[in-house]
Length: 260
Image 1 (cartoon, one colour):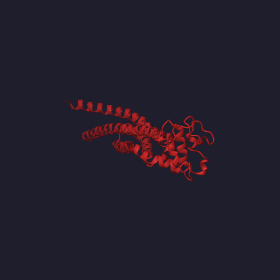
Image 2: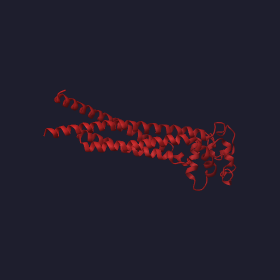
Image 3: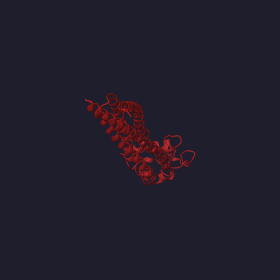
Image 4: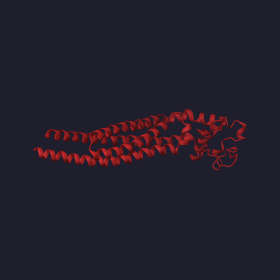
């Protein structure tokens, strides 16, 4: 193989890698937007429910995704500039940024998966206690709003069933005004509608809120985990392409130096 043919082959590889990295950067931006979107969607969609969870792992996973998605936007721009200028220092910085973001997204994905495994047990242990002890209590306005929204959104009453409210601090107080369940248990909310617990008036036979909230959160956790790990794998491919591109540029610089 002649030296000239070998040089042409390496030039062709460099050009191919350059365009592949441009394509990757586009996919990288799309993936970053997806990561950022999922993080924001997770917090906005169920921000009210966070106060009902004993652990902050769910929220932490979403915040990590938002951080990673924001970094992707900046890093993608850096990557384009580095590829265009073909500077090994910029490409090396880009390479290490990819690895750093990969680790961040991998952590978010793993946290989501781990929390998914213990979600059911946490809800069973804490949700009923949170609802019965903190609903409509001074300083617990966030929990009260969360419970009201939970029962209306998922058409449920109580943690396991409407009978759970019998042990509630709120129902036992004068503040309840003879209600047997909060008004948010009613199919059509009217003042003091919670005094009547007939199935035609409240969500009595539809099941408790634990099962429905668990399914809702589990679906979100699966999305967080899938997006985090999926984009992380995409970044590994990008890091490999970048490393190859840096190597080819290094060889070209060595050859140019040798001919001087």
